[in-house]
Image (cartoon, rainbow, N blue to C red; front, top):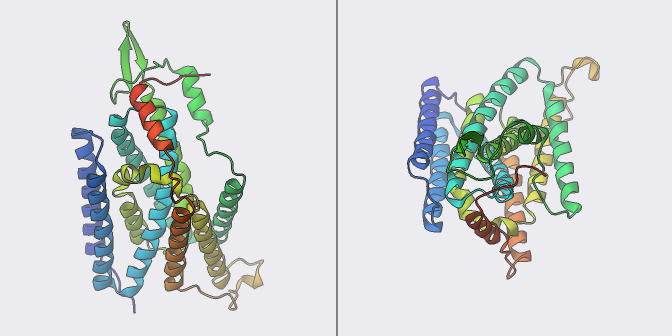
Length: 347
C-alpha cells in the first residue's frame, strides 16, 4: 500500500536536486572543456546510480507505488531526453559550434529545459486537478505524436534541423557577425557592436527544448499525476545530459530503431491515458457523465515493463543492424566545427 510522501521529504529532495544541477552547471561555467569518454561515462554512471538510489529512498519513505511511478517516469523521460540529443547534435553541427563551447551551449539548453518543463508541470497539474477530462486530449496528442514519429522515420529522409520563423526573423533583424567570440553573445568588429552566431544557437536550442517539453510533460502525467514525482523524474532525466551528449557521440547515428521504440512508448502511454479518462469519465455527453467500468486500469508495473522492453528491443536491434558499420558522421562534424569558426548568417 502506498504511503503519503511527507512534505519535508519532497521539499528537501527538490532543493537537493536543484542544488546538484546548479553545481554541475557552475562547473561548466568555470571550466569549459571537452570531457573525455572516461569522464563522461563516470558522470553518467553517477547520475544513473543516483536516480536508482533515490527511487529506493522513495520506496522506503512512501512505499512501492510511488517508487514504481518514479522509476517508470524517469526511464521514459530519460529515453525522451536521449532523443532530444539527436537534435542537439544536429544543431551543433548545423551552426558549427566550436567543440570547446558545446558544454556551455548544453548548459544553457538544460537551464531552458528546466524552466519550460517547470512551467508546463505547474500548468498541467492545475488543469488536471480541475478538468480530469484533459486526459482525453493528452492521450490523443501522444497517439498523434507516436504516429507522426513513425511516419517521419518511414519516409527515410535524412534528419535535419529546420530553422523556425523566430530564427529566420533574428537573422533578418539582428546585426550578426560570421564568427564566434568564445561564448559571448555580442562582439565588436571594426568598432561596430554585433551579435555572434551564439545567440542564434541558443534560440535554436531553446525552441527545441520547448518542442520536447510539449511531448514529455503529457507523457509523464500518463504515468503519475503527483507533481513532485513529475518534477523529480524530469530533473533526474536532465542530470548528466550534457555528459551523455559527449559519451554517446557517434553512437547516436547507430540507434536507428530508437525512434520506433519511443513511438511505441508514447502510443502505449497515450492509450493508457485514454483508458483512464474513460474509466473516470465525467463528460456529460459520454455515458451520461459516468465512467466506463469496462475500461481497464493499466497497472504501473505493466507500464514499466513496456518501457523497458521497448527500449531494450530498440537499442539491441539498432546495434545489431549497424554492427561493423558505425558511421563517422559525428566525427566529420566535429572536425568541421574545429576548423570552421564561422557560420552563414543567411542565405
